[in-house]
Figure (cartoon, rainbow, N blue to C red):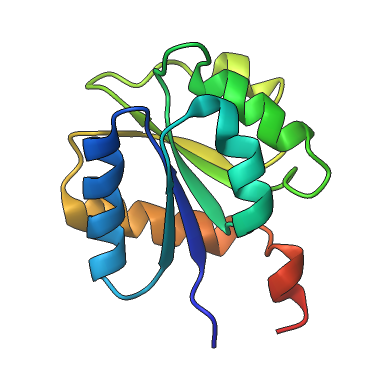
Amino acid sequence: MKLPRILVVDDQPHIARITGMILGQAGKFEIALETLPAHVVEAARQFCPNAIVLDYNMPGKTGADVAREIWGDQALHGTGILFFCGLVPPSDAALQTIARGPFRFISKMIPPNELLAAVEQMVAISPKPERFAAA
């Protein structure tokens, strides 16, 4: 059985690595990291994630901008996104109008066990990528 794939996106490489390490050490996910907002869609197309942990505040593009691009891509349009935020997550009202997949906001201060649970929940409610459909 193939492990669900999680793409971790954060413009701060150390945050991406730590988040990926927490998720990877659980042994429940295959992890890929991306630190450049402009490369997220291409990385997601190549990796085919079941869900994405996406930094909300990045230079050049916000998490909402990147989500719009992900959900606008035919191959990625239903991908679940966990927006990784600072202490106070933003309102989800603006995202409701562009959402083409499940999403949720989580704090970067979340304990590791809660991060794992949030990712597991997102994987459970996200549509399976095409490459998993036949498996």
